[in-house]
Length: 72
Image (tube, rainbow, N blue to C red; front, side):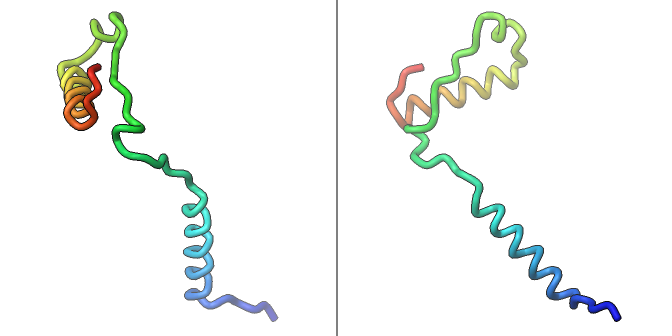
């Protein structure tokens, strides 16, 4: 006869394996000011940028300047 695992036991094993894998992931440590860098697109990138991307770069650099005193 074959022995069968209970469905609850299988789920528990899968959850435990997932927790182990997630626990091994590395997350950058530090504050925004120690991690973030100014975004400085090249001239070619600037020419190809959409308005939305320009807004993203400006917002990021403004945030960096306001929070960290960094001038991009």
